[in-house]
Amino acid sequence: MQMLRTIAIPERLVAQVPLPDRSDSRLLVRHSDGTIIHSRFSDLSSHILPETLLIINDSKVIPARILGNLPTGGKAEVMLSQRINEFEGKSRWLAVGRPLRSLVKCGRMHVNGVDLRIHATDAGIEAEMPFAGADLQQWLQ
Image (tube, rainbow, N blue to C red; front, side, top):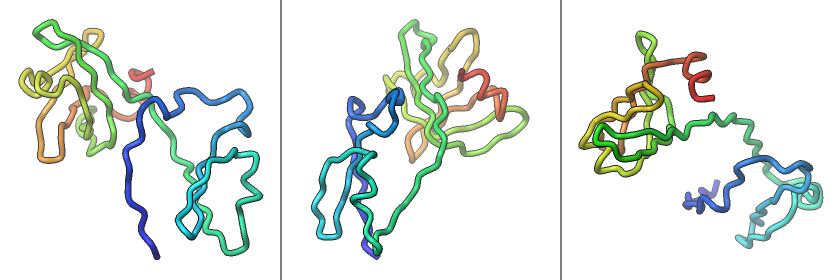
């Protein structure tokens, strides 16, 4: 089986809200010869041949972009990407953030009266949330 490489997609190209008519959604099609074409979801059936491998992503996206303030008074942003674990009503997440240097130096961020702890790791940063499970979901809304 051929492995595909991962590429970074510019944020401006990632949909932030669904289209009113979902069949108007854009569709990126990669043919077996490597050619890539841009199409629409409504044209999906014209791209599916009997030998086509169809991969369906049914994952859910949480509103994981968190805006807050550093103890120094500056603004900061953290985007939660993957939950590492939950413990004692808290959760730890792999995250990306900016300004990265300030987040790591301060080690915390304030969001609506809540302190988030930030730790530098080999993988990037970890954000420790004072919530887990449904409480975290509700807080992120």
